Amino acid sequence: MLHVTVDGQPYAVTQAWAFGGIRASGRVNGQLYTAQIERQGLALRVAHDGRRIDVQVLSPRAAELLRLMPYKAPPDLSKFLLSPMPGLLVQLAVQPGQKVLAGERLAVIEAMKMENVLTATTDGTVGELLAKTGESLAVDQPILSFG
Image 1 (cartoon, rainbow, N blue to C red):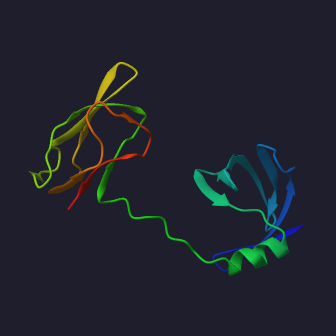
Image 2: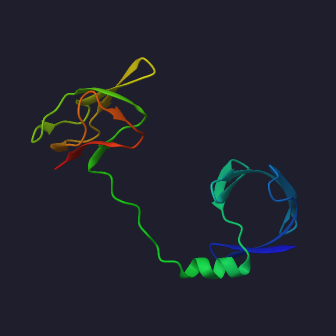
Image 3: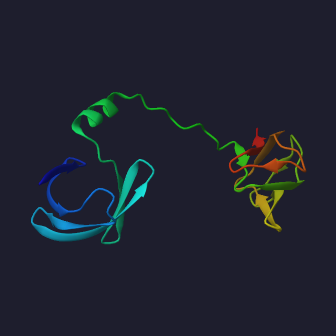
């Protein structure tokens, strides 16, 4: 039997599941359940009754050490236009210092013989152009910054 606490709520879980299996079933606090499980990097995604949660399964020692790890916030990329896919930058439709409105064309990327138009999501001012027309772009590569 497993004893799990989620948001301060204790649960007693009996299960028929082997690590790596895609289906788990058993009882939670006496009630029957069946859940689908898939691996997502270091976490497991558990889907049951229309809900999904991501969990980590750790030994007590690993959980203790994880609590001691400092949190490293991801970089703020909201001031950049990032390439959503690998492809060729065929057009930059803006210049540094230009004011743009939400929905306005910023750049065009060609990928798999299709042109993908990238537009502004909010109003703003173009800062610096970080890529050049004709350049091959990688996924999440910055194309331009907003000032």
